[in-house]
Length: 112
Image (cartoon, rainbow, N blue to C red; front, side, top):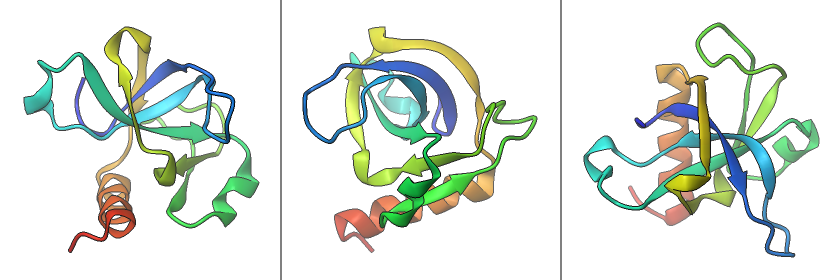
């Protein structure tokens, strides 16, 4: 598992507004932390209206990410999940999208 990889994950339902269920997600944790039992992810959704929320961006399907549909990265839904919830690797986001994701993470956390 590497930063920028897209995995199919199973996110448990918490009964709130958080994303849940089986869906693609982008790994945002650096590889040097792979000894941890959890991994930081940004979930994706195919509901394009979600792009109206701040701290999101659209990812078009391509041969690198292997997504089936246009998806929205929900950076504001950043969370840690148990690695056992990771199903299989789908693909990887392109470098320019990874840089955009990192910028959104900095913005949402107030980092420079």
